[in-house]
Length: 209
Length: 97
Image (cartoon, rainbow over all chains, first blue to last red; front, side, top):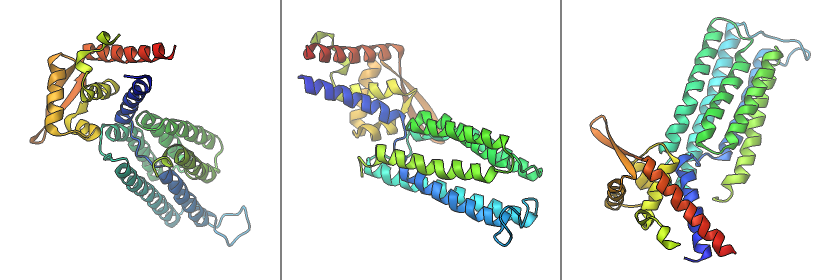
């Protein structure tokens, strides 16, 4: 074997090890789109709570009204479903291009690692809403989602871990500053998703597209 | 230098299997087949060969009525694989001089 052959052999082994252990069908585009859904959802939520009929800084409604609460929960659920749906759809598409299914040991590991913090956080948020304590809902969403990303980052591009840590930091800041939950929520689920989506798109997706 | 190469890794698929098992706790048959793009028979025979030299261990479990066979690298196999990679790296370094 000559020098080039040896080097490409070694490289292909390293690549295979990486590919077998990490879910690389995750598309940066799904991050960008999820961020857009979140920003639209946040704008709709803002309108529900603050309204546009009164002067800036005065609320038309409060979250404590049941009708407002129901609409907010519906908006949040739609954003969540659209984001997850888009991520799955784009992963299937990217996986097909890479000639790799999306149901493999790496994706199973990713789901298992993210599942525990996500389900715990989801239930915790539902319990808080049911008990009428809304103050920490937005920070909790960010913190538990961030924890899920850090845990899942092991099974996919390592950038996801960085995104997770930033979400946790935002969540903790949001917990310190009551009343700004929606802003932090938009920054985390909207702006950060779009930013990381672009980074990952240019880093990994363009090579295949 | 070449005599340091492990006979078990002379075949490319065997080396690939070992690489996957070194990077993962365990891997099942179908996932390996999909990842390496090889046929059932081909993969099975290479797995047998690696099992024979005790580089890998086989776990059979039942998922419903279907058997789910997964493989993991033994300590011996991991060491042999690491040594093989090291040999490759040394060879590249030597050729650079």
